[in-house]
Image 1 (spheres, rainbow, N blue to C red):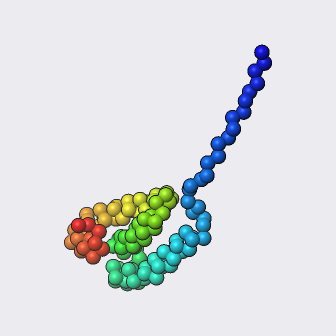
Image 2 (cartoon, one colour):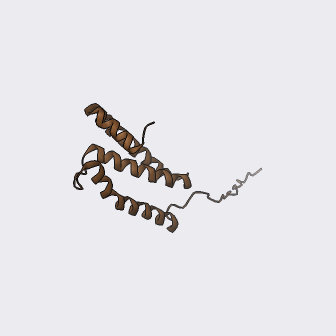
Image 3 (cartoon, rainbow, N blue to C red):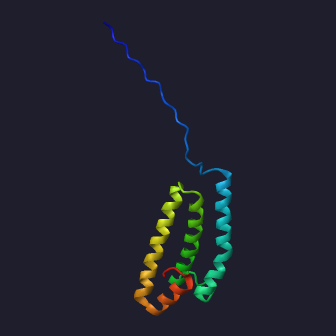
Length: 121
C-alpha cells in the first residue's frame, strides 16, 4: 500500500481589520492635530500665564487633558484602533503622574486645576 499525502485546502477569510492607512482616517487624525495646534497657545496662556511657559506642570496636564479628550472621541468611532488606545493609556498615565506631583507640591493649586479642567468629580 502506498500512502499519498493529501494537501489541505487553505481556508481564506476576509480580513475585517480596519485599514488604518485609509485616507478618511488620516484626514480625521490630521484635523484633530490641527485643532490641538490651534488651541494649544490658548491653553498655555490660560494655565501658564505666559505663552512661552509650556514646561509648567499645570500647562502640561491641561494639554494632556485636551489630547486625551480628542483621542477618546476618535476611539468612540474606531474601537479597534489599538495603537491609539495604547497612546491614550500612556497619556493618562503621564497626566496621573503629573497630577500626583502637583498634589504633593501644592494641594490648593491641585484642587484649582482639577476644578478648572473638570477631571475629577
